[in-house]
Image (tube, rainbow, N blue to C red):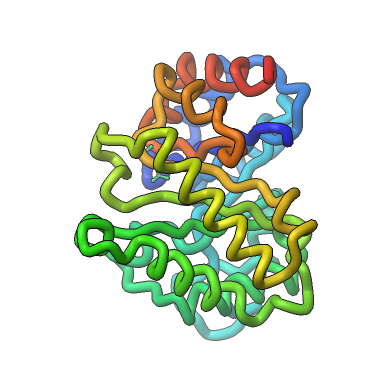
Length: 248
Ligand code: PGA
């Protein structure tokens, strides 16, 4: 399967910083590269990023289509400013904003209804890992998030395994651990849908991925790419990561 690379810029970059960043990137031939940017950047950078062959996306969205939801942004509005995808269920939204599996499930349904591609993030925290609950936590996150979609086969879904203890800590999981977990996620997706669907589903890894460890993750058979936070903010590094992905 071809490898994917997605940036998660979180709450970083102004419009001019984002434009400077894009100015330092080479054009992308492969179409499996994207940047998850803040809402305020999307409209401004979508043309530039698309001209480079890079997809642009948001980091969350409302589960509602429209209405009196102050401060929220819908899938329809995201598409209107050129977003190609949205990140759903990131642990910073689960833990800092209080998004539950049930809310994430509604967002997944809304993304599918609006034909918006999405990256569904799942991952255990350190207590859950140390308590031996990693797989049961992942299963719950997965089955709840996808429960409304079982007969719809989300055609443009990507899953990112992002253990909370590895995010922003410089303490990435080992490629071996991730490969094992991603293989487990693939099996569970196979149970929910079917094995053929699960086989072609991109399952990424995120959590302290950097230029110097990306290759070790890409070499694993069940790791189909990476979702990169802090290291994706440096244009020179991100460009080198893109080249790594394009070389295959
Ligand atoms: P990190 O973040 O690469 O800075 O660990 C990854 C993420 O939050 O998606």
